[in-house]
Length: 479
Ligand code: GLU
Image 1 (cartoon, helix red, strand yellow):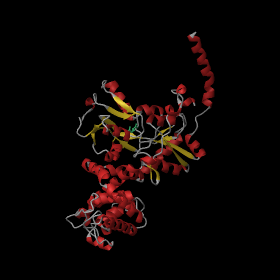
Image 2 (cartoon, protein in one colour):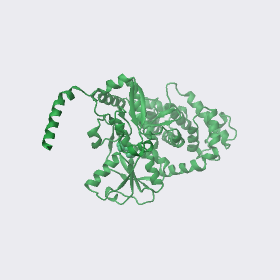
Image 3 (spheres, helix red, strand yellow):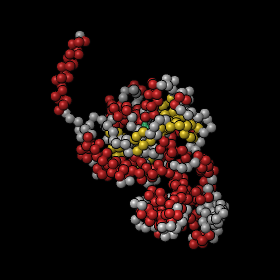
Image 4 (cartoon, protein in one colour):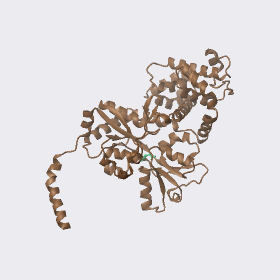
């Protein structure tokens, strides 16, 4: 009987084969163009896709927006509530591409076509400073480990458990944002968390007591995954070509710098002081900062970030070089800006805001935002003349003098005689100016990220939340 059934099945399959061969998979690129819409699924996190006061932003969003522009179609972003959901959406063809800081893994690659790598990352084991710190894989079993469900990290843990560490156990968090993992650590609900290096670098500022225990293996590649079951040949070629071009013309490096660069180089101590000051000092000056920023059409997070960098929000700050007050103005600048009492917080903030606005106005027109702001800030520190020198050096070395990233790398050269001898205005503490901008950008993004959770896109409801009990468990495909 069983043999007969199998035989019948074989016959049916054989009969159907020509039919199956006839229905060729659709060309995904043509489909996107026909619909005039590119649908990209991502996850809401500071390293991928989020909303700030100007609308959607994030590394993945920026890339997706550029791709949509090249394809001359609209971009629709879909937010997934966890990593499984991302792949579920691809499988169901609810999205064309998944762009969510996703690691290239064997299991995923077996099912989903993927792009060439456009970034690298290293998975890391994070722990709370002062607690027991494991230093290698062998020391992981016995610790309470948390990782995102469906993540590449869980795939790694499972492989390790099967191969060399059968005692390894972990908890899977059903969320899309690694912030949840860090929250668990912070609240003593987990001992260790697994997250990617670039994510931790960005988020560490919010969790200053968390640190890297060790890198979990080698550097890995980040890719976009595509919906399976379609003819993706042309879409993949288009995307790879796009990534190659962005790599060549420096766009990728610039976006990486823009979204991940500011986390680097901030020490654990300064991050924790900053977190404390946000709670304890900022509330006292917040109203004033917002008011002055409003007067100068400036983003208050930026004004607050500069004031923190300059004086740690201390209106009475003084330095041995004679600069003073909340915005650390020199006597000459204060005078030029109409400030008669530098130690008055309101006057100082006004003077600083006005000075920055002045500098910005005097920068060459072809420097676009946000580079324009960062350059103005560097000039706030070393003066426009030196900034101009650094721009000349940048151009001389083949860099783009209108890009902050290129300029930043040359600012420290103003301290080396080999270089400053050749410039018009000579020596300047360029490294300090570059560091100042890096710090301000870091403080700025922490302040901005702190403020925005309320406006984040809401993930869709989970099945369990709205389906009656009888049909819970039936997968969504059926619906
Ligand atoms: N890169 C991870 C993955 O591809 C997601 C981020 C994380 O879990 O930290 O699954």
